[in-house]
Each structure stands twice: as structure tokens, then as C-alpha cells.
Length: 120
Image (cartoon, rainbow, N blue to C red; front, side, top):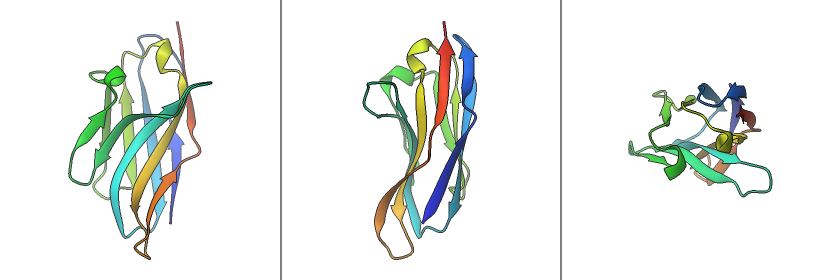
């Protein structure tokens, strides 16, 4: 299994920037994708950005042009560079990994989340 730990959240003024980092530890047979999700109070969790093993990146329409997702070659680190933040970006941000464990079982793994608060 893999453990995911997010860091880098905090309080920032509108227009500012933050970079989130997800550190993955443990053993996986293979990783299909890693990404960032967020959940605001009383809202459903939504995909923010994802990078796949095939090299594709997916962004929510609301963050296109402002956020950039990237990873290291070993799927140990996942980043989310967030620019031009606005109050609507305020949420708990979660790191997600989808992949096969050593038993070749496909699973979804989540971090504990990191809070991002954007003040107006």
C-alpha cells in the first residue's frame, strides 16, 4: 500500500500563489494516475487536476490556466502550483493515487488533506 501526505496549504490573499506537495511512500506495483481533489464546505469533492501514467494532464475548467500539476519520475512527489487564487478556491485539498498494489489489486488511495484558504 501507499501513504500520501499533503503539505503546503495555508492562508493566502486573493491573487496570491501557493504550491501544494504530496509525498507518497510505500510500495505499489504500478501507478495509473495521481491527482488533486478539493472539497469545500457543503460541497462534493471535485477533481482539480490529475496526471496519468500515459502522460496526460486533466484540469477542472475552473482552474485551467491558473493551476499546474506536476510529478517526479518515480511517482513519489506530486505538486500543484496554484496561481491567481480567488476565494472560490478555498477548500480542503486532497492528494489521490490510483494504482495496483503488490497483489495486483487496483485501489484508490487518499491523503488526509491540507486546507487552502483564500481571503478576499
